[in-house]
Each structure stands twice: as C-alpha cells, then as structure tokens.
Length: 253
Image (cartoon, rainbow, N blue to C red; front, side, top):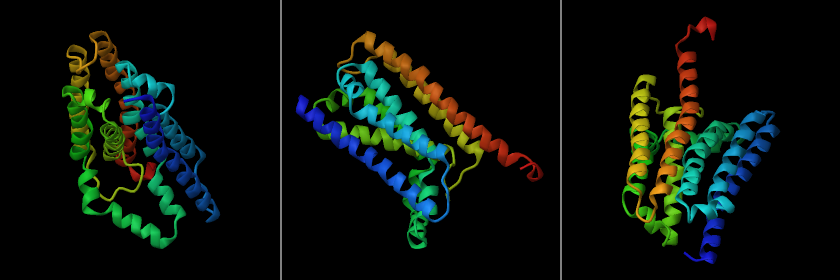
C-alpha cells in the first residue's frame, strides 16, 4: 500500500478509539451529574487503553509495523492484549448503566443478556476467535496479503482488537456478566488458550510467515512469548483475586 493509503488507513482505524475516549468521558460526566462519582483509576485505565490502541494504528510505531515484523508484534501485543485488558478494567458497561437513564440502561441489560452475546462471550468461542484468528493470520499467507489490501488490513486489526476484548471479558468479570461460567471451567479454557498462544509464538520462531525474515521472526516470536506472558500474568492475578474473594467466608467479605 502507498503512503497516502497508509495515512488514510491510520486515521480510519484511530477514529473509533478517539470516539471511545470521548464517549467514556461524557458518560463519566453524566454519572457525576447524577451524583454518582466514577473512580479516577478507571478513567486512567480506559485512557491508557485508548493510548495503547492508538499507538498500534497511527504514528511512528504503526508505520514501523508496516515494514518490520518485530514492530508488528509490538502492535499486536498493544492492540490485541494490553489495550483490551485496560479497556475491560475501565468497566464501560458499569459506567453506562450508572450514567444513562433507566430506559437506555434496560436496553443495555437486554443486549448483555441476549443469545448472540452469550455465544460470543463464551470462553471457548472467545478463545477460538482470539487465538484461532492469530493462528490463521500467521500460518497462512493472510499476513502478507493484509499489507497489500486496505480493507483486509482494516478487518484484521478490527478482529485482533475485538477478539482480544471478548477473550478478556470471557475470563475476568469486571462489568455485569449475565452469562457466567465457573472459575474451574474458565481456568481450563484459559490454560488451553495460553498453551495455544505459546505454541504459536514458537511456531513463528521456527517457521517465519510469508515475507518475513528468519531474524525478524525469531525476535517477534520471543516478544510474543514473553510479552504475552507478562500481560497474561495480570489477567491471572485478577482472576485469582476474584476467585479468592468469592470463596472466602461471607463474614470476612
């Protein structure tokens, strides 16, 4: 893709994240107007999530990712793992339910309880979409093709972010979650997903995607392996904290 196309693509991909920040701040203001203060740390977490995602689609890092597989992997970690985790910790659904009038809040509740949301937020579905999508991206010629077609490049980035978000909300329950699964069940799915992610990083190390040099694939594979583990450790900590709090005697809660 040529420079003008890349610049246009960057703005197209950045727009939803800028909008997400504006909407979140407006909801925070509306919540405050209803005398329901919203924690500052959640605003900071949401804002950091927006920054992570913006860095992966626009600016110098995004430009480097177009030509260097190592930097592509950096943006993958920001857009598909760290960014979604920070968004989830911002608890957007909880904020919306506090800030919006009862009619709109009931509509959100109905959507959260709907069958499509139940299917998409199921831990196995979310894991297949997230980890399975990465396997398709890096073990076929999709990675090479996405650098030649604007729409395909856009769709891959949208999928990476949304799949990462779904995967995170399927494991840790920060917002209201009508379709809940046991800690033991989520643990088994999480272990399988971690294994699939780790194996994929080693596969990339040994078998570079089309158009990627061996040295770049080795560096990116190590980054995916160790960088992914660091972010997963945060999810594991939150997951275990929730499990501990749910299992301790109520008199201690």
